[in-house]
Image (cartoon, rainbow, N blue to C red):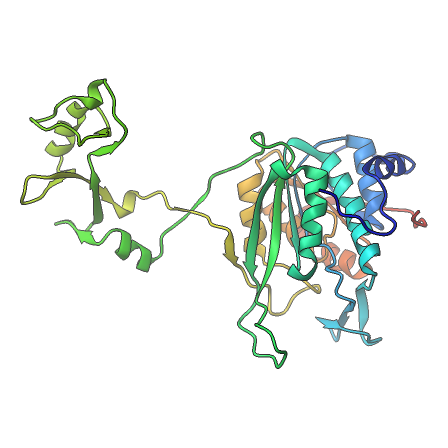
Length: 368
């Protein structure tokens, strides 16, 4: 499927256009890198210099909101059609201009990612369905992993005749399905979940539940044989070699019902946690360093799940530098980009949080 809009270039035209920007003068990766200026030029130079070498990209681009984002009196805020404050960035493109702007950068980001790499693109639901088609076109539908619903704010009570908007979306794609870095990190159970899933308490005060000794499927091996005169139910087999049940029973790990039905004890303090689902509740800072600054713990989760220690992490809409800070916090080198002087100042002021980096000033150029 392809999204058609006015002024759309082909992917090859975009890659060809990137060649004219040449390479970085310094191609060492001893430090993280921040490129100040237009991120199409920045991405072009990065790709021309290093090729496909980034394992993780998180971006939070403009949302085509027709607003001006500014900093006034030292605090970040959103100002629509106002000249007050210092402008951080303007989000005032037509829809066609915005889609082409984003499409060009998605094409370059796809080229920069390694085969084990992933992209997380954070976007508003008003424009997100168009962006999803662009991502399918560049990455391939088979490499779509998730659309993550992010709860961004408290419930709203506005006068508009519609439901309150408390969410946005993160599209998660990999470069090559099955090859991507994926660290299966689990969340601990909260107290309510613990009591619900492990309602029993033993003589030592440990919470536990019980599960059957058998599992689905029949076998002809040892797990299909008799144990203590019992056979597994029809269509099922013992979970392990029945001889191991004797050892478990000896250590009190099997509970027997009044009717002589054995079940295995599973303890809450041995539970490895629950799988992370696709609805996340991460509210953004109340007093951000930069407009649209995102939740630090949310970015940490993304870095933990989709990168490893020697990974390069990229954010070409760096803004407040939260992604850069989270990457450094997890021991990764990063590549950041932004064209906002306010963003650059914020990031330079938090260098102790982002770690040392090389600043590359890009030459201002007219876009084709």
